[in-house]
Image 1 (spheres, helix red, strand yellow):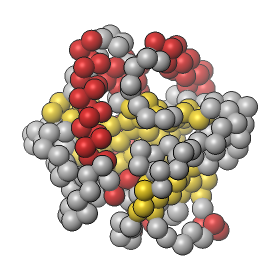
Image 2 (image 1 turned 30 degrees about the vertical axis):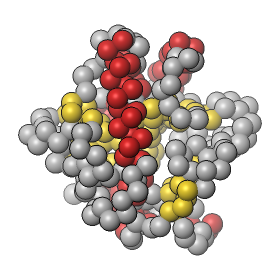
Image 3 (image 1 turned 180 degrees about the vertical axis):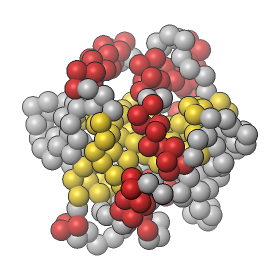
Image 4 (image 1 turned 180 degrees about the horizontal axis):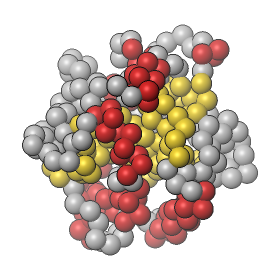
Length: 274
């Protein structure tokens, strides 16, 4: 096991790792902002989220396949890898949007807790002032906690879900990243992020990778994109690369995936075995 893998499994996270140059990160950020103008009238996300961008944007598809990210994912999941979902999390300057403390795997319906890894790629500076992610080290080693739906106005999460636990602020680790750097964290790790108090947008691409052996328990048909190796299990409907930005075919598929995501996230079956 590599030092990277040992650190990740011990703490539940690992960062920072260089993926893009600062110039490349800013170029991708500019590409996103250009395409955002074209989707103002489309339903592609929720609040400050832009979901499944790799299905409709060629540059996002390029990012989820980046070899430097996949090199780390392969150390944790093996050679056969799917992208199950990805989201641009965008915090505008001096806004109150935040992410409450939560564990992703509480809601994702995936049957293998260690068959998933989240990568978070910074497309600009990410720090305490503009609302970087916060981690509770080793919290992935315990159980999945009870969560409540807060439905707070500024909570970016779809259900406003919030884990029920006693927070020890002394344990919080702030995941600060330079433009083009990436972090990795486990789906059971308790994490959150605060509002953006800075003068600049905070933009990050969260990419959720799964091993091909992983199954979806909450719905019958779910979607994923093969980005490494082969998929001998075929548990997911394979998503093709977008041939062009915002094509009719990709937008149609994107709508189906958003509906599937809604059915997964709002599934109320607490008896799912994970």
